[in-house]
Image 1 (cartoon, rainbow over the protein chains, first blue to last red):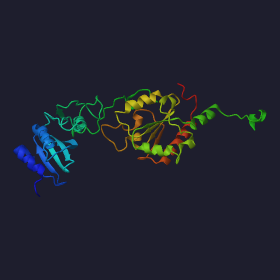
Image 2: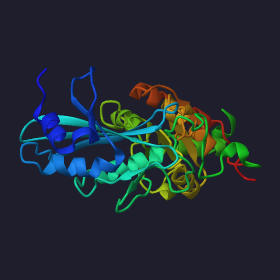
Image 3: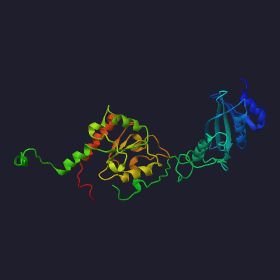
Image 4: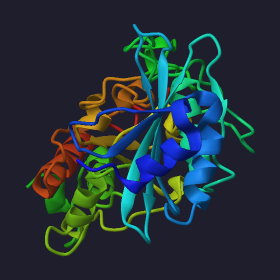
Length: 167
Length: 160
């Protein structure tokens, strides 16, 4: 299959700093990025006229618990004018789970990064308001990490079975 | 027949419990605590086709202080549990609670970090309506079970 304009331009601009990875399931252009490069790559994709990735679609995280680096942050971008899409993947190590924010490039990434932080504990450097998005502030840990105990609950109120003298 | 024969016409005797329970069970003031999809079934049950007005329970009260029957309809997460407890505590006696749907009864298929495994871990539940979601008929059946339960109570039993 012919190389898409996205891959060509990324290779021209970033050389070996990026790596094209196969995506047999859906055939989408998929690029592995070093975590230090993520903001540069995103800014390039957004600003380059022939690419014009103006729509931020998704950001999520995957916990590959037995691999090193452990986490992978996955980005999905789309261009409305050119109708092309790209997927970026950046590995983040367990001992320093941080990556630069892209919320300054697409505002929509703001809450997605908060969710990824909430569920996986990946911190986004430079994020304007990196609080938990869905869980309560008292929650300890990050529940979608594969080593979070599946039955562990963190109730905010005393449960009835623990109370004395209730009907 | 009995003492009525000695009384003027139009006067009958009964037990105080019976007449109070009759009033209570035919005039539930529901507080719908709706958090998920079961709420659609509650709406169907409340609307004219199924019509809980036939059971005297047609007015949802959106203040717990005016309600005597709380309907826990939908998934209760640990995040919302303090709200459920607070709303329940604000209701005046006598008060009853119906858990509607699999999630409110037991957590349903959510066995995870975020969902309370049954609303009865937070507040006492009188009637459980199963289903995911329960059909309006099941909801009405729950109302009738609730009425049957109210009928068995005595005004003395809640004094302690």
